[in-house]
Length: 101
Image (cartoon, rainbow, N blue to C red; front, side, top):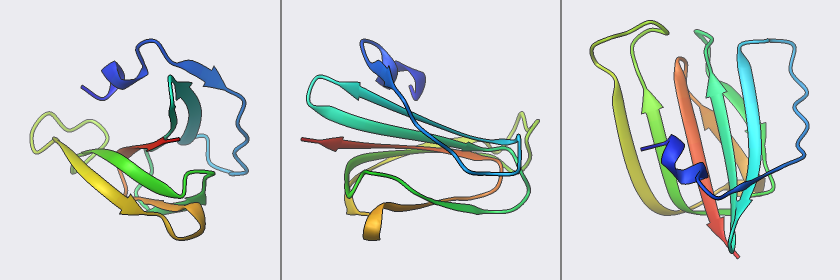
């Protein structure tokens, strides 16, 4: 479900200032929506700033470990503000936020 959100989207240039190669960030645009996807494969939460200010949709993929086969969940929330575009991503998780323009 998470990957389906990128069908038909154009990947946009983004910059991530991070020392860990286990954290990745991607930006995309699809029709009238701006999207940011962050994956955190570390055992520590990460916080980063995006250009998204209000997530009209937020998808969270999480599990108890990077190689977990059980206890993995995918949840979807609606309409939440991101204070100054700050997004927190828990350990072993991926977060996709979508903002309609």
